[in-house]
Length: 237
Ligand SMILES: [Zn+2]
Ligand SMILES: [Zn+2]
Image (cartoon, rainbow, N blue to C red; front, side, top):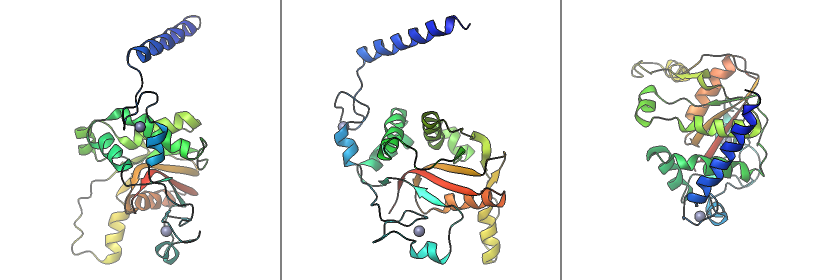
């Protein structure tokens, strides 16, 4: 087997070159030949300014904490994202998530990595993709956060722990609960099913309100996790 492996890998390379010759790579956004995302389209993606909230990455006039995070710090440490969820990036994310355009995984994940200069924005010991509801996973057939985590994990040699988090179906009615009980009910929207290291990054596609990130982070904090980063493709403003 050891002796066959190099031959197999050469064969694989040759097959890759042949299919590349048959079907040359094109930019997913503008169809220009060359790379899965051309420099022009990459440059068009809206960037978050450097001055932002140290927790939730909300753009600010200066670096510091936003009003919401300074009143009550979220359970996570930092949101890391270079992009704003807006045109034309959101069109790409929508096609990738909702129109089975899995060919977007590579350009999206790699553009995110390039935006940090090819280095990871932090050095977590594990990546935890946000799980999809079972029903949604069945309909879609893939979990986009898992695809991102795999790509980044491979690139930076960070283990991905797929089944670490589980979404709990929220069957409890919110009505009639006190504010504290309602919060507890939401906090327990995720269950930690595996042991995870002290420093982890939760991987998600888009940070919308930050509720999901905060819910997962509080579950992880309860389990004793020390540092929790959020790696997301883009942030809604
Ligand atoms: Zn392009
Ligand atoms: Zn904030």
